[in-house]
Image (cartoon, rainbow, N blue to C red; front, top):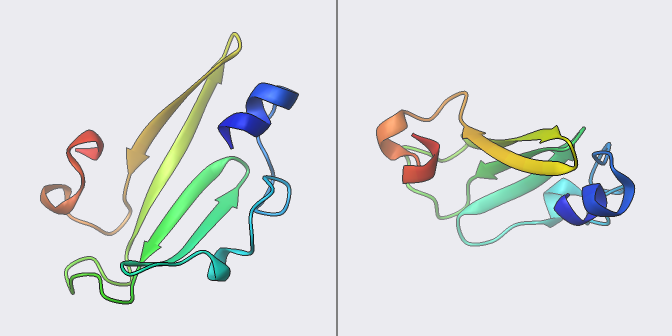
Length: 88
């Protein structure tokens, strides 16, 4: 997403535009999917993730202006005490 923004000055619409695999094909031990929607990155936990966060997500919200890109981290369904420190 950052590289796309650096190259084009706008945020990618989806995983395909960002040059990523489909959301359900990006997974790992604790992550079941990673999706891009209008530059927002949503990481959904699953697989071997702790039950407190399994099937929940973190959203990386892009903030742009004057050629820069910053990120704000939030979650619609994970308690702050279970989020990474940078997201609290």
